[in-house]
Length: 221
Image (cartoon, rainbow, N blue to C red; front, side):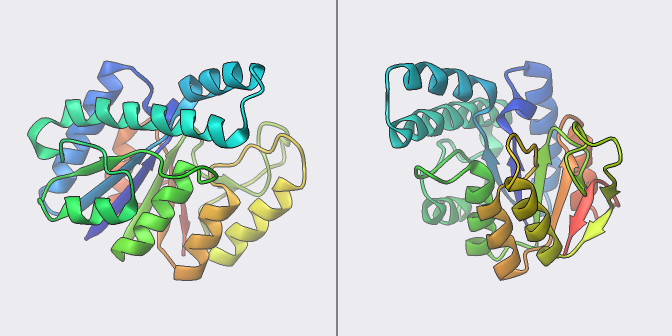
């Protein structure tokens, strides 16, 4: 199986124990599967970007800062994985496909301005003909609406690709939407019919469970 995992930067963080647990889980998966990982920037990226905006930096410049942080986070995970990981983060999806020929786990960050790491992971899954895309976020799945703002929000165990796009498009119309995926990632997932599972990345075991076909989080397909 070809597996692409998107780990939010805030989920992975800089906690050595969390990073070690992810490394252990990923090493276990890599013994039987081809594994790609895309790591986000999290709060550190947001802090740097906030400072840059104070200097009237352009959004493209701020994106470049965020991309640099995602690649630093990727290197932390590579360090924890050791020899089972490709030693440097590829800077494009094409480079990631070439790196995978080494037989090692490929870990990367962002690629170009305007693309979140969720979108990077979705495009990578498309390019790699992935059997599964797992999105490890700080929520336990996809809800009908933002559960932090709407107590009546309902967690969805399974939805179609089209329904995912509808939920995100509707929610994006309101300010401050809190969603596990962005619209570009959702559209890429929809157009290629990529089987996707959104899980609570604060529990690295859920990533392993999703890859093994267990019912966790929200399955999109």
